[in-house]
Image (cartoon, rainbow, N blue to C red; front, side, top):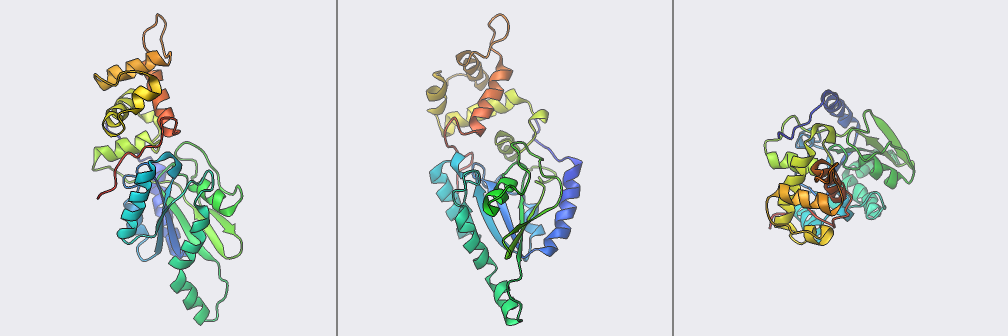
Length: 281
C-alpha cells in the first residue's frame, strides 16, 4: 500500500502559513517523540527560514525514554533548541517559556533599545496532523483555548491565543508534504495516527508494526498477548485475534478487528513506551 495523504485543505493551509509566518517572531515546531525525524515536515524549514525556532518532542510519555534523550541531544547538536514534553499531562511545559525568551533575546533587546517595552512576542505552533499542537497550546496557556482531538485534521483555520500580555500563540492546521520519498516515513506516520485510518489498510499496517516490533522490541508481543511471535506477521496477527477473542461467526480469527486493536494499543501506549526510529549515534 502507498502511504500518502495530502487532501486539498493542506494546500490552502500551507499558503496560509506562508502568509502568517511573516507575523510571528518565533516558530515552535512539534514532532511526535515516537517518530521524531519522520514527523518533521521539511516544508517548515523553508517556511520558517530566518525565524527563531524551538523543536518540541511531544508525546514523550509514549516514547522510549532513552531514545527521547538521544533524539533531544541529536537535535541540539544539530543546532536546534529542542526539548521533550508531554502536553497532555503538562510535564515539561514549564521549560518552554525560558526557551522562548532565550530564542527571542535579540528581538527583545532590539525592541528595548528602541524604547519599545513589553510588546507581545508572537509564536506560530506548527507540525504535522495529530501531533498534539492544540493540546500543547492549551497546556501552555493553562486554559482550553484551542480545539483538540485524537484524530488528524481537527484544527482547520487560524487561531490566535493570548498567553498573559507578553505572548501570543498562533495555532495552525497540521500539514503533511505532498509526497513521502521514503515509504517507511509514511508507514511510521500511519502507525502513530498522523494519517487518517479511513484511507489505510489496517491489517497491512498492523503487519508492518508486528514485523518492526519483533526486531526492535522482541519481548512485547509475547508479554502482552501471551503468544509466539514466530511465523509470518499475518500469522502473528491471527494469534492476537485468537488471544483477544476477536472472532468471526464460527470461531474464525477476525484479523481486521485484531489489527484495529493492535494499532490502538500501540498508539495509546498500552504496549509500552516505544520509538519507531533510533537516533543516529
